[in-house]
Length: 152
Image (cartoon, rainbow, N blue to C red; front, side, top):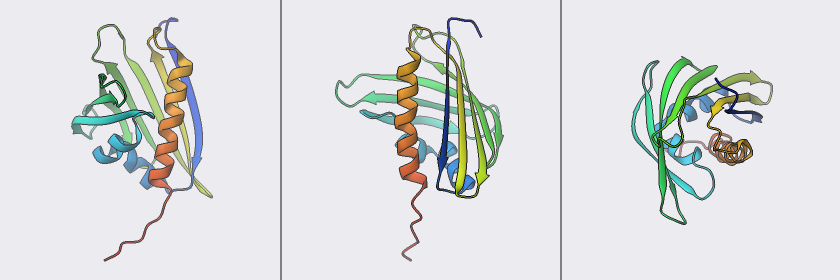
């Protein structure tokens, strides 16, 4: 990694079991629902959940109609514990590869979540990246925290 890239670190405790939080990071429908920051919708074009696999996702700006896409490659998948992946934007103006490490730890009230994203292209202000992650994590909490019994 060079010095002209940014890093963001996030920490949150979710009132949900680690297995449910982990599932939200590898399930296509869940990722499309919670990853896009406010004002965006998301589409996963293909997904292959295994080390060496990954997914390609597009974010669509709901207000303007513009979109951008990126590729994720899974480097490490430890169920209910850790996910490491690399991200690469499809836009050649956003060069380089980002490394994202997601650690999950079961705690008394749910799951402690720690995320580190490194190698953010210099043209993306880290505070905007951090803000986007905060919005995504709000949506993640709303997805994984409710316990809704089956109605069948």
